Length: 478
Image 1: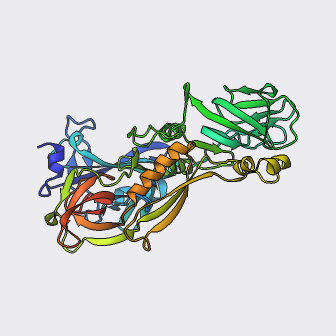
Image 2: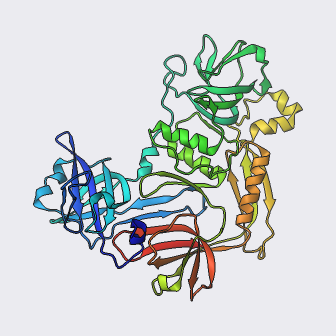
Image 3: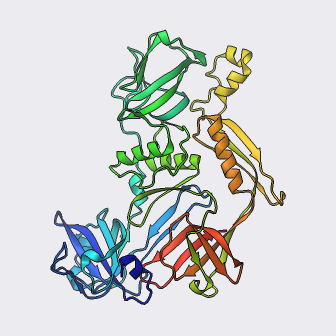
């Protein structure tokens, strides 16, 4: 019997193993815990290691993940705390050990297996080790997303009028950005903290500056203006270059942002559309918010899975089912309606974001003589919209959404995609099922006497995997 086959057998006795690192006396140590008496075998990588049978089996250990209600952007994830009996041997750890941001791994297997054959189910970082009562304690998981909840901008300007201001970051293809003056003697401005691909146009108060009057240092991401500048300086830029590659798509930029924090690239590739995007960060912003903007723009979802691997997915509607959930696998009376999602009768998307909307800083002659050009510089973004043909227009809704998409053709493609996904109303159902293996965004056929008696194809949009429980919570959109 393979491990995957074993996992599908509810009649198999399961043992949970936990390996939790902590710092004690400036040394990293590991707490080995189990839900059943267990010792690793002499042939295991960690040989003859006894795991303390101190886990509280009555406490459910679970990992939850749910797509956002918009079906794009950050998916919510979370791991329950690990509850254990506070044996006298480890009481001192409550006050003397530091579990913060130390690795925790959770495994499941048969008590007769070798430790190396156990299946890793959860992996994450600890937040704390806290007492629950006189004889119980819990290890609380940190939200792995917190690693990305840190500032993107790091480099600052060393001297001059903008001393200590941040050097901007420019990704993709950005319209009308305002660089930061870093040397008022040479009239040099910072566009990006790193190499850039090109500057395509430079303007002062909306007027184009002749290319003979500036030089671009693509290697350092700076521009030097050789004429006097009295108005507001803006430019259009093809931004960050990494290892000789101009990063333009959501996946390219996201994987670069992950690398900043020393994290591996997303294990999913070619998931999101390769639209050319434009992201310019001049004021401080957290990395996770940047990733969210990139995913929101392309209809993508992002999250860290149960093994702390970064994942990218895209809700693309109900597809070909890969599994079935029948009424015999759904706990009686557990299938209920969680929420309804209305059909969309009109959608407006913003594209070609204007990073420096100009009012008073725009030259009066442009406002007076070129109203269309003035509107381009004044408005926050360009807009494209379209309507859906819906069965019940009075119940359908209208939505507007800004994106980082640069080109009209890409914006129209994304607009049509989103409208098609919302042409008819949808329902999200929640249920308890004995099937223990689910993949977010996959399609399953659900059959249940109430609501889904005909057997409906549905997309998995949420789940709670309960390691030591006979059922999991499943949320599907049909």
